Length: 349
Image (cartoon, rainbow, N blue to C red; front, side):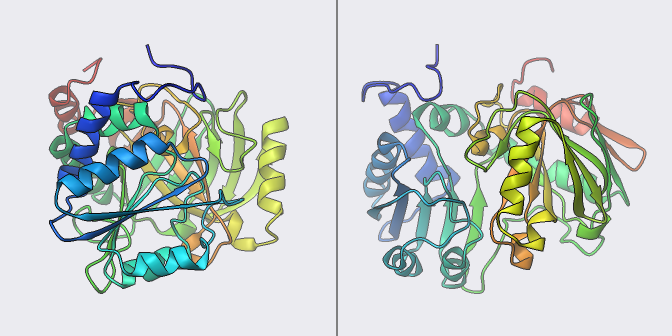
């Protein structure tokens, strides 16, 4: 039985499984080559066992790992201390375990532009690495990501509902690439990569309209995570125009307001979650975004210069691509997707 989140465990906990997962990380998930420079960044909230296991696996693969620790920043998307940013420019591969991730920061953009391959594994601990990397079938997850991307882009409109009250419409971008690609490719061959078990569609950002209800988790702000009560968000033309739902909604509203930045109220993206290793929410946003059958939405349009970014989880969504239903209350129903779920051995299929 897995310990509760926040329960400290000894070095022996899943130690063999962790070693296998770290090897899979550097050989399959983010393949490193002999002689490459691998920078591993962690903040003071990171799990040291995961960091060291990854460095050992990279070294065993013939790469040169360098571990950099720094303080936990107040909010995600902020630049790290300048020496950290300079080190990233010289990396062939950068694996991030920091809880307050620096995805979307200037430092991350500069590293990608310099040719770095970036893997965001924010807040990962031992159990998460074993479940979401060590025990999943990466080729099948890639197939699932491509299938969801392609099916979404065959539609002129995506309609999302949920039992908690979500009723949201958005239009995919008809000019998007025809196949699923890594996010944030750079001129020098660099790119950004996220943990497997998630797909998205390129949207026309100003076409988000309706009600979005986060009933699973929201993070940041740090005061939130798992939600006790739903947070209902009214959206018009891609902009948050109202937030309701009690104490947690008020905390969320205050956090957005604290930046005094209009870009923080813009919807940034929508994603499907389907990692078989994530069967329940934990409050750690990296894995919560991959809860099997969920949808995840980002708020704070970093591509337009927002000061920070937050993500929230819709559990049990129903999704239509025009008249074609992809998902029904958290269960994939499109034949192509159902077959992939069966191949992955997901319970219920």
